[in-house]
Image (cartoon, rainbow, N blue to C red; front, side, top):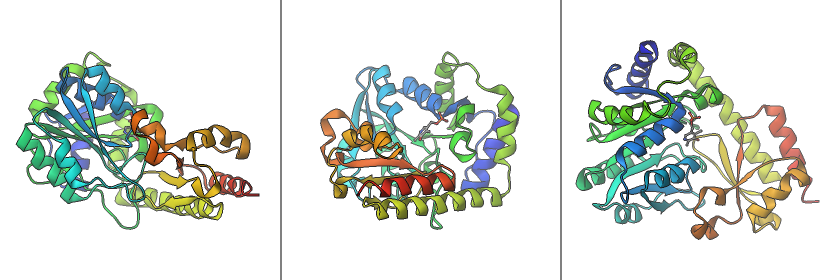
Length: 323
Ligand SMILES: *Cc1c(COP(=O)(O)O)cnc(C)c1O
């Protein structure tokens, strides 16, 4: 709906200083998930390579496989989960069609540095690839940081597809309203696929999300501040319970190491956790290809997009496990 495409264009200008034409450079999708799927299906042909960060959001590998692409992961290592520039340079070649990045990052909460995004864009130019950035956590950032959108970096024009969603920003994940912004020729290629996936989604929700995108800065600041408080509560509680914990810069996830509690296999630990403590976490290995799971074996992703009482009760229960 034009009202939403116009609100998305205003949002890109207001927060990121990026000008997009609401008629030619915006596409509303069934969540970021459909934006990702349609983008990869549009650009990736059989045998083309897609470079991603690993661990990574689980739909990436599935859609790359559906498109017949080859998945080329660059590892993010604990505790900081930042990609190594040399490993990234080596992963991008003339076979690369898409460089798919995610910042702030699910599952680790890491944020990519502007210099890394610049390198990705430079490599995309050199190897005739495109950079696709999944920015669904763009507003969920902490400690006074600001998100860096790839579209605002030098050389981005015509090389970058930016993907986001209302789901995480407004806690409306079930509405499945997402979008992408890109130069007209890129947007049109994705539209050609998207029209045969869903054609249109959630039309009655679209004006409501348009209203949300125009909410004052205080809404966005208080959302991040509330979440930061919950992050700190969860981190303190997990540390008190004996986990090793890294502090995420953004998103609503923390990575906790269960090894200090004597659990070297987070997969087995997470399967027992509902029974042990009435709490659910996801082993980080679920976001990693089975062949490369060893370095992440004892790590668990916990979510803090919960009510304060729920976080307090969960960490209290986890604290009883040490006995
Ligand atoms: C939640 C999530 C998505 C999916 O967003 P929807 O708008 O719900 O489809 C995409 N990417 C990442 C990294 C996510 O965490």
